[in-house]
Image (cartoon, rainbow, N blue to C red; front, side, top):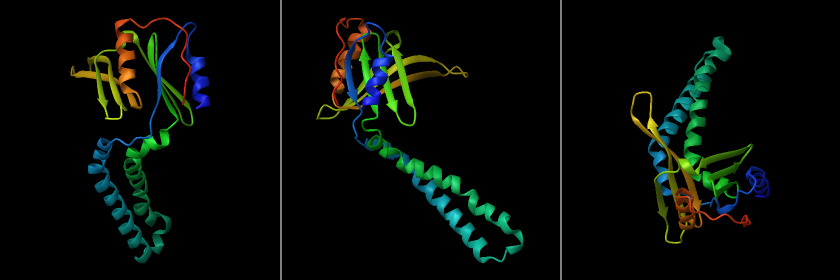
Length: 195
């Protein structure tokens, strides 16, 4: 958390104030388990393929082929790794707890994430469009901001989003972003960050 606070202080421009901030919560979103519809069969097939191929090579009298015979079972290993990644994806917020900080300043919205590297995503006030908020009974939730609407190479409409959450005070984040988009955030002293 200290490293993120220092990164935020370094990132803020002279006179830029923090109007709202929120740490990402360690909450699992049930909708992220929809990936299991694809991940479970994918991983099961990859495990079956690798297991059958390894059994065939180990007990099948292909000694003259040596290492080449193990190419088929080894071919399944990357697919097992992808399956394991998909199965673990819904649990990512548990690992990200205390590693992701969302900030609304008087001029932009930031997401600071720390892993092996520090990643900073920014959405300037003039790019913020529609906002969609999902709020739980305890006041925590998610906020999705449309930051760019354009067309892809085929001419189809495409929207780019900036996601915030899950955070404890999603209504506070929404209110700060509405004021930011409307240009009504007051200039003042920077708020102090709490954990």
